[in-house]
Image 1: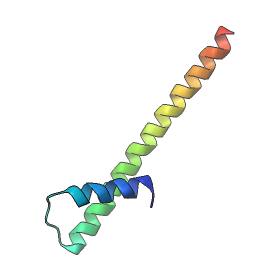
Image 2: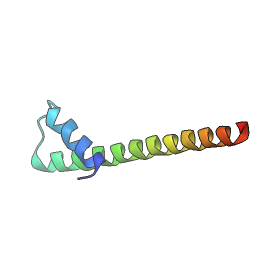
Image 3: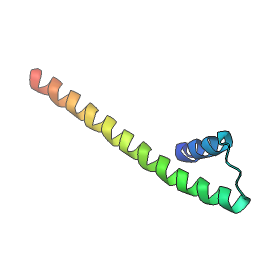
Amino acid sequence: MTDAQTLAFEYLRRSDKKLSPAQYLLELRKLEAEFNELLQIDDLEQKLKDDSIRTWKALSS
């Protein structure tokens, strides 16, 4: 299971929504896509921070 799948599953597991099996699967896929997008943005932000730190260290040496 990917991180996005785990987050989507846990979100729905804790949700108070009463969903049919079909609705549950649709909601799971939708949430999975949203969490995947958020995780990619977070990963990109971290890479940019790391690159900035490396550049700053290289310039200050």
